[in-house]
Length: 250
Image (tube, rainbow, N blue to C red; front, side, top):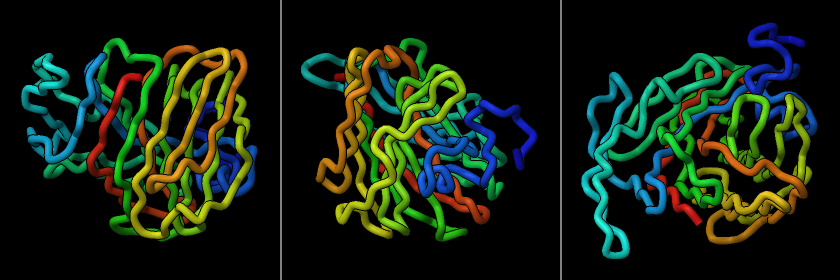
């Protein structure tokens, strides 16, 4: 292994330099994962133009949300360092947009949803774009995240217009879709929606800019876990923005 920390078998280690490397030549060990989401069970949480507690502590609050006639206080902090993982970097929220800065070229940064009881069946959507740094970058949506050795990953490489849906289980990473091109993927900004439903089979679906690019079925799949997003680059530091994040229990 090129990276000795953390130990092999963790999603934060990679023999060849990052999630982009994995997406380009599967299967390989992931370098890292990063990013975020927030949700209240049973409701759709739209993170568009959310209030900000402060960029220094990367925390954000939402005002009271009303959905389907039910009003719930969603003022709980949804973003913060305590749910950030992966390599060296910074996560903050500004004007309702989540920013992920991954500083290590062989590691991405991960932020999971700050929720005690994640619903198993979810749909997560966001508008994702490159902000600064290396142009050779990738991002992904995570679901059923139990730990760094067990989760599903739906990844996109905008510069190459490629996607890959994969499963990381018991420390082994396996592509479920294969590395595939899609004309729906844009090189600048992409609106993505990832859906994770069921356990036998688990149904994973990736939609990019309104087009369903792939749906896969996983027998005896992971039945529970958190959700999150991630961004990183093989070549060096990169900053990505996740706008209009919305998590919908299904």
